[in-house]
Image (cartoon, rainbow, N blue to C red; front, side):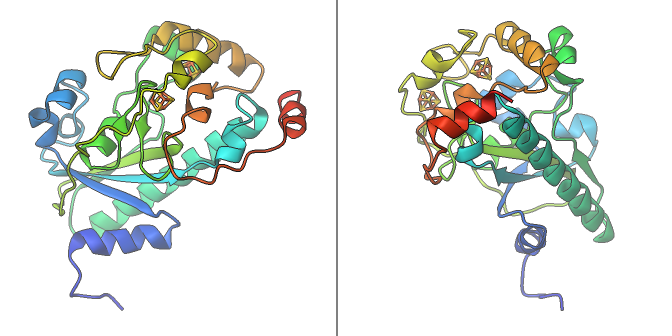
Length: 253
Ligand code: SF4
Ligand code: SF4
């Protein structure tokens, strides 16, 4: 039975929990214009109300990806995890958008990967909507040197997707203190020397180097690379990783 004492934000948090989604945030569309970092990075055409005119909010959902599997990246194991977590997010985002429509709101889910695969990134190295920036505005994390959104719970090992809607919620705010400890591990671990050793958004990852590596890995069925995600020490996720023997065996397949 529906609990009428709950506000819309909590109703949809519970709805997400039912679908196996524990991490949920809400950002107001106005923040795409008011927040200095986001307004400087996200161009016209890629804001939520460009995609859904009249939109008031973006609901962001996130799922963790286990360090034990990320540690094997690049590998078929990480590739599979990438596909499964993306599908899980896309399915839930679609389900949530349908529920919002039942409540009488306009709602669109945004696909987890809004670009044309590794090859497509060569010509246009960006997606049409940034979930990272939406999650930042919803107060779910801060940017690291690796340009990923670092979360308190799992560092950069969380994937996000978004639902744009005319509904209004109780909104989060960007976390004020940087989670990145500027250890430089991501910079040193990058096989393409693409990670700048400075704070985002001054330090932007060199996309051509990262994409070129990803295209080559895709030909072997083991993209994306993921090393800058694996090595980051931020997050309280379980630090258990496979043995070197297991990692070597997984990477050899
Ligand atoms: S995914 Fe790999 S190539 Fe791309 S920035 Fe991270 S470490 Fe470098
Ligand atoms: S590896 Fe270190 S420098 Fe890179 S994002 Fe994580 S905390 Fe920041």
